[in-house]
Length: 272
Image (cartoon, rainbow, N blue to C red; front, side, top):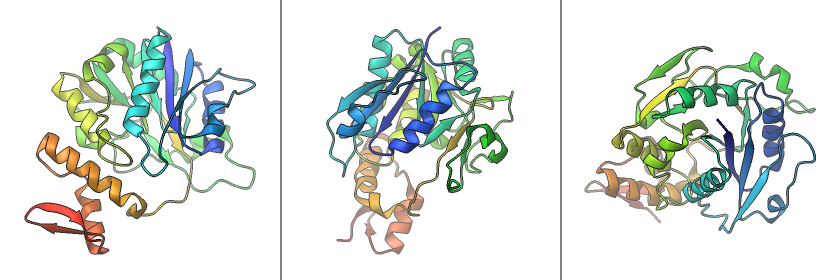
């Protein structure tokens, strides 16, 4: 089987370079590496001079409302056009553990009707010399809000509401059955849970894979993510129309507490 790694990016060039290095030093190299550059002319011209070759797919985008769902679909199409049997999706901030590609490839080949996710550790800020790939396993502390099987272990029957696109893989057959990400979602929020629910609806399983470990590089953020409030509200409305319930309720409640949103008769709207 052939395996493609797909990542989408706007900025974060240093994080992308470390991800590329991690893929180039793994126990199994991907057969292709597709990077979708969303409104990023600098990245559109990126060609690493060593390691795994990269194919960059430019995508016009407004930085205020990045087409995350559409970009993942575009990356998948490019990878499938190159003959990929297995699609591995990694967030641009994620460095791959040394066995990630091999583990995902093996699991997707054995269970092509399962969408596999791997544990992700959020790293502290890097030292002045940057992260040392060889020492990342020493920092392995997967995010407590998600399942985290031990290395060598697998779990099936995962909750679709806990799926995230930071790190996951699926056989091409499963991807085509899922239809990919719903492109009505623009910007941050909602598209991950929607994808997982559709996958389950189409008869796919959801699993967590202990050997596919990834390490999320630190970057400044806000909690709750007030910089994404407009996109989260817009995408929450899309999700409610499609599924009948509000997603991301914790964030919506936090935005209300901060005076950014109001709820009236079961509907959320901007307070501005």
